Length: 146
Image (cartoon, rainbow, N blue to C red):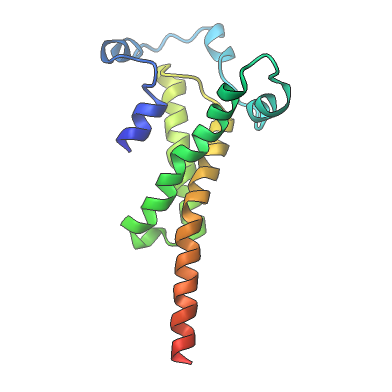
């Protein structure tokens, strides 16, 4: 959680700068720096951003996915409550939404609904190895009992 918080919320800020963001002065320009349209940024990076270096595009898209893969992998290992696809999806979505809302409210970065989509996908992809392992193990135990 600490690493995700640092990478998502405070990636460009020193500690003194963080405190200056706790002002609630939102003008029109502020709201224009955010993306509330699903798949807008993803589409832009995949198909339209010819003027942006490919490495930057790949880092932005895959970084959101990879960052949350660890969350989706580790959470079911820490708690048996998260051994279901639906619960992992909701947990990843909730955490990502929390990070994005903090960025929106406090100005630590820019809100992007596509980050929520990619982060949730990352959580799901991180959960898949655990799910596959669990299903195979249960199948083996069932065949032994038969």
